[in-house]
Image (cartoon, rainbow, N blue to C red; front, side):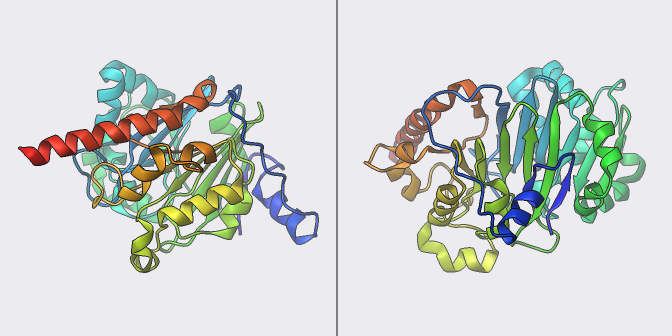
Length: 333
């Protein structure tokens, strides 16, 4: 089942229409121009498992005019916010968070919760924490050592929030967010993807960690921005099956099926400290490559803004080339 709150235009309606034979939602055309009203999305961490020099644990900050949500909060998320925004800017952003949404129980997606909550300003209102039960047990196990400041947090499991429209209204009142939909995916037990819909018409979807998942494809179809994991190169397909992650080629197929305005690939294995060879070849300009498909590669500290979508595939190419040059120089030394 899909866990949805806040509106009647979410994934549940799409699934119902599909079952009744009304067909899937039409794909959004991949136009090169800006998409007005989209939030800004900052990638705090784009790696997986253990952090590396270039890629930290997962964290994605989604901000818009009247609200913000943090999707996953891996180890080092707070430190990355301080590096990107300065300490004062980081505290302001932590204070205005309506929700921290955690996809699943693995440490690289939730170990940063304690630091984030401890560093929120005293006057900060209570924040909504949506996630697996393990996330709540982890924070409760810290006891007084957590030292939560401000209004603390209210925990809701993904399925509980789906049945609690009042809580959704309390935390998202005035933000314009119509729905936050958690979609079960194929990874570990109690693993979820997320779809955000705003009254201004934008839609942002995040896969969390997963194998290719039909339910998530349906729920995220027509997204303005799709953020999808691409943990392994395609030659490691067997390993991806074993670990319940996606290969790059699988993530690209999902992107084609969803028809997003822009797809950002993230959550790369630490065997790729910079850019996987498969993606480097795709981003450096081959015909029919990522630029033609409206797909780009995430890097730590990267910020995606709706009025600059056309710039990101070119930016990804330049960063990929720069990292390759740095790697070559390092090998000479």
